[in-house]
Length: 196
Image 1 (cartoon, rainbow, N blue to C red):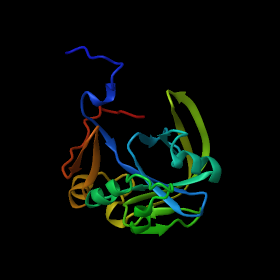
Image 2: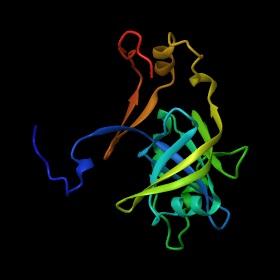
Image 3: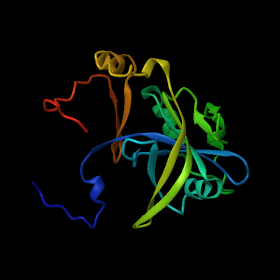
């Protein structure tokens, strides 16, 4: 093992695997913003979802004001669309590229999803918590969830897991600057009688 300097971009010194998601939020002018994030995850096993945000970004400000947001899990074929959502804002603070992205309307809240994303969540802001440098954890309670028919797992049936992932590959973000398409998987070797 090589000791590294933790004061200089610790998380970029080796690759780590993350989900890539798109957070949707409503702008003050009524437009919608889509922003890719990778520091994101479910919180526990209940209906809470969280991601890291900062007050200097419009996503944070939008959610703080509107109290809702959407989460889209893009398909592996949507890597370019996901990248475009990260485009810089224009001088007038608009993000015109987002208007060209294919979207669908949320049903229970005012928001949009990236069209054809395989897993979609409509969330109500639960809390903005902690100070981790300039970053905070934005927590949402999941109000409604949708999953594409080709990606849904049958309750209690893990027999089709490898086939399901092979037929509908997953997108992984490899921080800091790569991505991967996951088509192969193996059942995790849990100890006998393991329970969460």
